[in-house]
Image 1 (cartoon, rainbow, N blue to C red):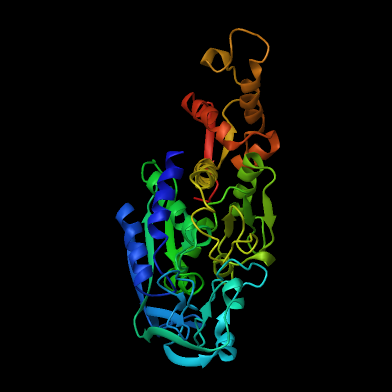
Image 2 (image 1 turned 120 degrees about the vertical axis):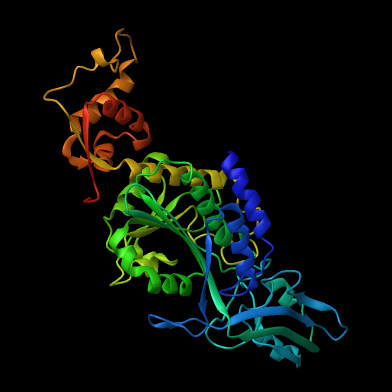
Length: 429
């Protein structure tokens, strides 16, 4: 549970920061993550740079945003909740009657007590968000709308880290940092990614790992525009980490065509860890797996969530706060991704190095005393041996013998140590 507690504390530190696609909130957040993994490099893409079919937008900075009534009372204030102003709002300073004011107000009609999260990144406009109850309590009269913001030629920031292993073949861990104060949708992914990297740094890695923390959509597009060739050459599996902090369920979003190594390992681990997990088609995609799977990009990247984005009621509202996530929820997501990574690290073609069954007893791998129940663990070993024919990778063997990979790793190490097992890369090296 220590990892879960650490991730929750980090999310709590990041929660108050106002973030958007660009700006100082993103830089401040990335700098906090960089404090935890100093090797993390914070990069810049200038406003106006064309990245495939997109153009990097201007940088947005907001200083103030509020609505006052005729008595000078603030109906809503960005300083109280950074969801109260529509993201990327242009400046405004106007007095309007209630009828006109309502055209600039966004609420969540079916959830009267929450503030919705609304943005307008690529079309200049302004607006405010409040609860339905707040809107319905507004009385006729004149209101003062104020947004002090600016859009200017600046930069879009993202962060990356490459951890080399014995092989150039790499696993992509991607997450996003571009939303204001929402805990599950915004912060659970980055804190999980950082904790995974802290753990990976302690490992003797067979594979290499690429961590990418980007503003969603435009950030992954910009990153791919700079790194696609090397990623197409080396990425064997990738995972978009999003909404991984609650404790309701586990979910995974398939790659565009399915059947990739990323799909296979996620299905294998979740099947054993949480058989009731929810599996979503690529038709139900929504995060950066859209870009990684795009035609011509074709990277084997799936999505991993607990409650999937857009599928839980607090999503994109002020109710997605620190009470929605928990150390236990974050720990569970970390445990799943640890198993995914270990499965990939060990996923090779294994072949038993003798004809017929090896004599395990003389090597200390078989019990010398027979009693009820003692053969349960041995059966996992002998079943693994029975299917270690050099034609099936570890994932396939695990599925056939119905044993989680985490329960096979110790036996694999023992067989290798005794010279009873031959191994061959599953990645064509």
